[in-house]
Image (tube, rainbow, N blue to C red; front, side, top):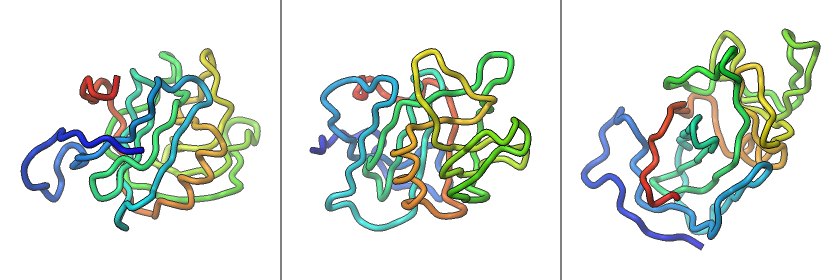
Amino acid sequence: MLALIVLFPGAAAARQPWPDVHTILDVGRPLGPGDYVWDTDDVPAGPARIVVDLDKRRLYVYRAGVEIGRSYIVIGPPEQPTPTGRYPILQKHADHYSSTYGRAPMPYMLRLTRGGVAIHGSPVEEDWVTHGCIGVPTAFARILFRQVKLGDEVIVTRHWLPAAYG
């Protein structure tokens, strides 16, 4: 079920600061640890754009201005924070293991930085943290992995969402 909300009027710029969002998913309730939604029904093809809000602990996926996915996330703690910025997806690896943290599993890994920060499948609990990566429920990671391409843009930020998201 989709709700139409105009968030950013006007023509989309080639490298605007945020995705040109015109439709968001109507989830009906706040997402909690381990929760996610995905709906691509009647959404046009095109590149995915991902926004990660570290403060809200949510990852949002858009295609053609339509929100197609949302997930609760785990992030790095203050002593090893998840970095903010704009990142293209540099690498995809479905069965990845960390070379830094004792071969910890990182299923459906989407590498964002050459230093090892990635989006990947993870247990997602309220009090869990990562080593700076963005952990999403593994089932969501599998769907996301299939939907994104190398070079698709990820914006990692804080407090960007309008009040319409709740």
